[in-house]
Image (cartoon, rainbow, N blue to C red):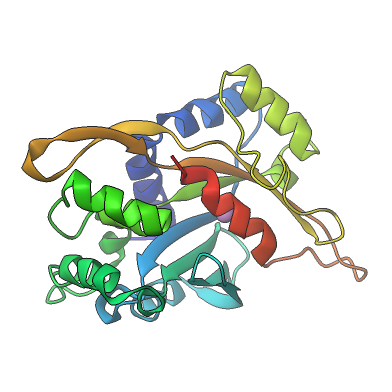
Length: 265
Ligand code: NI
């Protein structure tokens, strides 16, 4: 599978549960824009079989290099970002929940799910859009996890897939600010995540980001019950150059911290 095919698979899987993203992308294309992805982000647990360490070789194998490491104290997350060596293709952002920083009962729920992961077939690229690699949890389990960590509940219910794609504003011709893009998105009837302000970051941090509120779609839980839960959101990023004219290639932890909240109920 070449890189284009990989990212296309991820996109097709993502828009199935985040149909608004397809609508927003199509809207910008209808304005004559070529939509370029700034980055694609994933969520996982820090358990051996599915941790960042287990996933990373696949991303490096696509011709990517590590570009940054991040820690989110309050959400108990750790993350790494990767950039394509050749300079084409979206950056990749992998985050993982530090499960042992929660109480043991919480960790047991996570470990029960992770014990079902089929490690025999290995971590091929297809794992990145495989969806839930364990049986559907009950809605009660999902709700209990969500009380402690919305991130954990999201991974438990939805598994492995793109959590969000991100439109590069740098690559747009007719839009040069976050606010102009957000106004366009709101005119389509979609809400913007205003946790921590509509626009996270500034030219001084060299990365400005914003996102929609996640789509909400029915998801199947144990016993065949369906509940409408937050799924995925669409993000927008504008990168700035440093004093030497080099475009910022990493991420800003404080901003990403609030972007994570785009999937809160
Ligand atoms: Ni992001």
